[in-house]
Image (cartoon, rainbow, N blue to C red; front, side, top):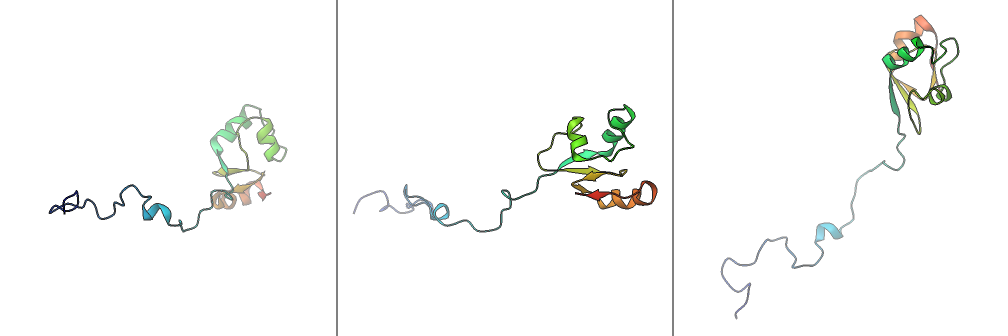
Length: 113
C-alpha cells in the first residue's frame, strides 16, 4: 500500500475534505439579520442646524420638517433624520430623549413623525 496517506504523519488537516465543498459552507447559516428591514436614520448635529438658522438658511419661526431639511440641503437622507443634541420645535423622524427633555420646557414640543 503506497500512496499519499499511507505514510506516517500524513493525512493533512482534519477539516480538509479534498476539494469538496466544506461542511461549514454547505450548512445553512442561522441567526437574526435585520439589514434588509432596518430603518436607516441620518444623524444631524444640532450645531450645524443652529449655524444654518443663524445664516438665515432656515426660518426658525416655522416648524422644521423633513421637507425643510431636504430643501435647504442641510443633510442628505433616504429614510429619516435623527437630531443629535437639543432642539427647538421640530417635526422629524426621531430625536434623542435627552434632546426632547432638555428643550421641552424651554422651546415647546418636539413631534416625531
